[in-house]
Length: 220
Image (cartoon, rainbow, N blue to C red; front, side):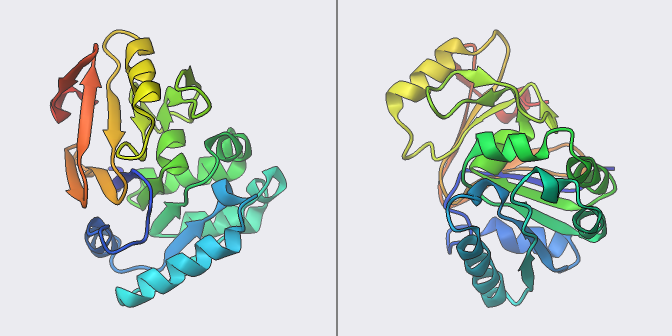
């Protein structure tokens, strides 16, 4: 049975992210392994420092795994760290860079295997986008390939800050029957190990299907 999955709308590791306590509990209060891959060109060490401070205030430990390029994603020591982790968190940043680093890499296979064995996995903004397939291309709102941990779902992160015009374009371009999940910042769409979807956090999640609002029951 797979572990908990959290698709976070962005602005991670802040007070409004109330779901993080439940994710920590689900992991057995394990150390959180932070992958700042998507922030590779945006001072990734700052993302790690922020996460370490945030989880420290929750009484938990966190550390960074500096997987910033393809070579890092093929490194056996990094893959071993992921396989041993009980809670992995993909930070926000560039979804295109994150996808290029992880796609078909040894580390990606280690991540999927660990999640399938019960590891808690969270991805915020770029992390949430890449975990799904198809993936929304942030440059224009059309679609491109994601990594398909969750297939036939696409995520619009930062929905409360996203361009309304771009969001409408994404919803209009969506293939028939494809759920588009618009997630506000500091808000998570959660999937339990049993496959049940729920929402928690400071904002809201809106699901669109065939151009209309729909319930969480349309998600796979």
